[in-house]
Image 1 (spheres, rainbow, N blue to C red):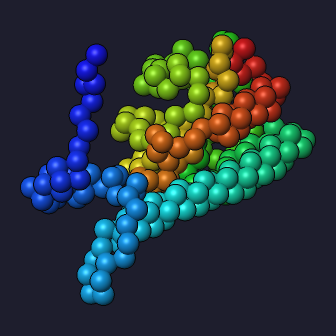
Image 2 (cartoon, one colour):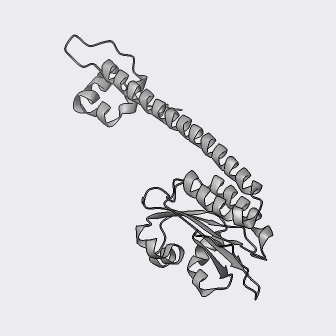
Length: 234
């Protein structure tokens, strides 16, 4: 049986490279497998090009590693801060103490410009809220005003990014135009106890690519510390 593989001679390779002088520019990966000597002084050899390419590759790997390290550090710090926040919420002795802690601490921990809380109830009697200057509103779970949040609430998980004009106006009223990005946290599901929104005037502060694991955890904790005080979501 004939061998289908064609064996190239050194002359054929040389002739091909002579006719295709840009071969290594179009196929830089081929440089990595070559064994080359240094070029004469004043000339740029293929060996130098190969070394430059390997150095660039090492720099990219170093940068990627540094990003992973930085992310790990950031996540560790965030985990610690969320943990401390949850402990402070659970230590609140009354509903009057809990609400300011929740709102102020969220604003501080997330460097937020605005924080809004919408608590849901399902009965015919409207629960009472302690007097507060915070952006907290009670809404019936079937209120028409909540329909614009159906998509967010149906996800049953935090959503980060931009909101519609109507959504921002419902949450932030006169400050709606200033708000550029928001992290929305549904408080539980089946049924949902409310909606927590952490907002920034910076459009890049909260985006769709952000990790939401800690936000999910925070939303679950907020739901559990709020529900005992009133018949929210039951």
